[in-house]
Image (cartoon, rainbow, N blue to C red; front, side, top):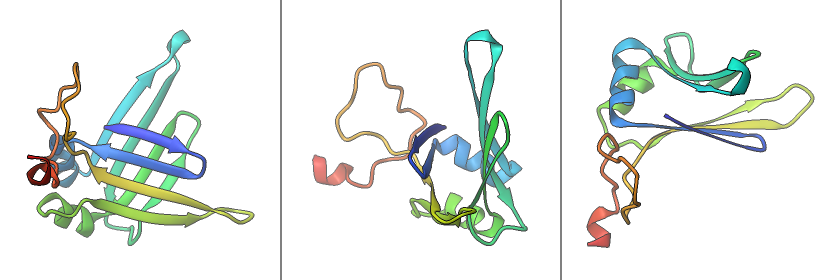
Amino acid sequence: MKLRIRNNSVRLRLEASEVQRLAETGVVEAITVFPGGRELAYAVESSPANVVPSAHLSETRITVRLPETGVLAWANSDQVGFKGEQRLDGGGVLTLLVEKDFRCLAPRPGEDESDLFPNPRESEAG
């Protein structure tokens, strides 16, 4: 799973096996270890209580929750992902994107793309 944070935007891209695991178990998580043993965990959870995507932050963990029925449909379709906006205290919006991770159109040395989704534009590039 890849995490990208830019200003008030959180984007997570999941590999094919991670999308399947999310649909089957309700959670997929990754951990980045920093010097000194500190860790940052980030997770996507499927929740029957959620009707829209939402984000939660603890001291060392970012969790994005998605509607369970939407996750099940997403895992078995060509749907690219979920987009949501969460209102912030004091104004502003946090944009959330959770997407399937696609293979690059041009191979990149050292990249393992074996568990990525076929790029929908592959037929255009050939």
